[in-house]
Length: 173
Length: 449
Image 1 (cartoon, rainbow over the protein chains, first blue to last red):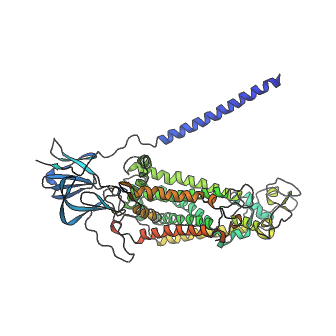
Image 2: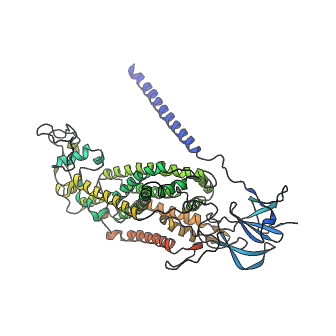
């Protein structure tokens, strides 16, 4: 009789052992997973991407650097455009250097007065006056962002989430 | 020197291998006492009771592993007071480091010890790796169950942990140096196609380098990474014991004049008290022979102490002489010009500068090629090298053997390559990452945008 019971006992013991080990494994994996998941941010408190940058009249002819937005805003009379100062290689802030002589060029079918060029202090990328990468490790041109005029108070608004092509201009009436 | 609570067992009081009471001495009078010292002392327990004499030679290992371990210990020690003083918040981190440097009594010295120790640890670990490579010490010899190649892999992981520890520590002062090093470092991670931006987000806890980043790097720096490194260190040490000590001992056993010694009483059984009376007879190869081995206490312990104390002394003196820099507070608006990585990452900074490739309309960012692929390949190659190295086992434990000449040359070339890039990055890069001769003065940089 005991002989007949033996395998059954072993089966049950074996099953319980596996059940226990399996439950332990599942518990540890789930808890580790939960702990790791908690490290993935659900909310990021980023700075807003649509920013009022001031009345157009306060912008000088030529270039104004907005450090908080890491943005260059260019003005040529009544037309404005904005180029990002974030290097496309590894994200350092590029610096603008005034050209000794401003050049007139046609870029994407639109005339553009080039007054500066941009250079990155981290890895030596260089960009032309319209943000095109000229030399160094930068893989693509500096981003251009949309500018608009705020309907409520007439301030210039930069939209850092809206990349535009190089023919974009904001022309004030 | 004899501790007051230890005394020599009286003759006839005990059977061999049985310890009536703690008994150990810094200056053992017999082999038996020397062995007892190792077995009954927790700190000494990671040593064997007998060691192969040439393994202790200064000019074989240069004791670089011990130096690395001593530096790690020193970094933990000097990190403790710093943890009491440092505040991991973006508003206060910089001020607290400034206080450590200028206000806290001896704060500057503790910080300098921590900083110099970290720099030296990178050097020591790399040199240790080079030593093990040049002597082929990742090869398995005559012992049973040896897995030296896996200990090499552990070692490579420990090197990466050391570098990552340095990198995370680098951020904590929250100065300009820190901020931009982390900007560049984490942007390299985001250059991985597809998942890159998510990796970066996980690393810095958001999309911008902010409080979440600082606390992440802080916890990694003080708990996660040192814990992992400490655990691997223990395993690294244990494997050395399991693998029969340094590779050099194997080389001696393989030497043509190695002979079986005939039955010798092995220390292990008697010391552990497994056997009473007559020792079990075990045959040993010649390295185990009495004339080639010495007692770990004091021969090994004395040298280890000299190395550890020497390391501590060197760091203390250097820390007193070399001030630790602290740049301006972190400013997300202004990138320093030039912005340089710490010296051990300069070769990488140099590589990411030079590896953007344009094939027609396709552009591969140097950040990915030079920052991810190339170092990844290098580390991968380093990891699997023991399995690629087909040279004879008899070359293990020898410096620059003829049959390993080609791979040693390759390793030296790779090292020189990295050193050359480091040199260029360190001394020949000026504003806008332009090339200058080391003796050239940099031009003034107009304005600050």
